[in-house]
Length: 269
Image (cartoon, rainbow, N blue to C red; front, side, top):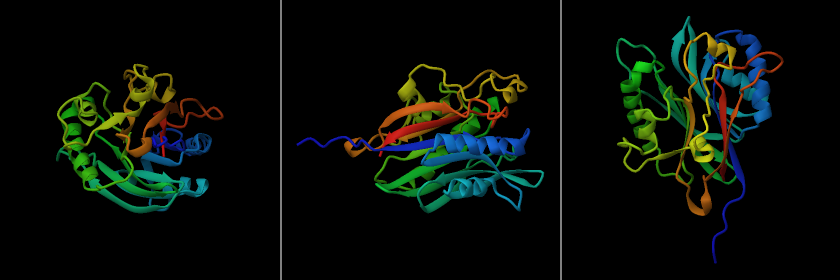
């Protein structure tokens, strides 16, 4: 008798929230409204601020009724900029690791891990934010190697790992090709699907888009630099990608939520 494919879905989102840049207090309401509309089960966030009195991940998790973990990375004007994972279900384990950096480039990149105790089994989720400058590909490649070592340290898992974040790299870059197995892989047999490409093939999928007024002032081209990566599907199709779409790509009450667009994917779970 054939095992039937899993039909239930897991909804995962990633989004760079643009720290406290721009009209950040107005943007906070637009961010929350977008998160409520998307209604993801798991949310990976980058450029989350913590000013010592308030933590934006904690604030959002409270408003959504979610669990959360947060780790700081860089600091600007004594205000932290970090990564966070929010979850509809308990986060029973979490960890973090620093990523490669060079002494004269103080970006303090990190990755965060959360083990989500979902209703149909535990889900390993990783969130990161890599160096941003165009000429830092060599740094990002070393950060990917560190990241893969961190992910492999969390084996074994019973659901394919999910890796989310702002990778500041185009799909054809060497660092993204490392993740998807199109060039030498730093993690042995650890290879991921690019969720957007898996579902939408050659469509642009820009998450850094000059239609967004916050991006226009950067004088940079439209780019796809934010990703959800998923490990290969397991038994009965667990983790198999079903949908992937851009979110957070329109203003809320006249306010654009962030300079980045978000991404949401649905997987069999």
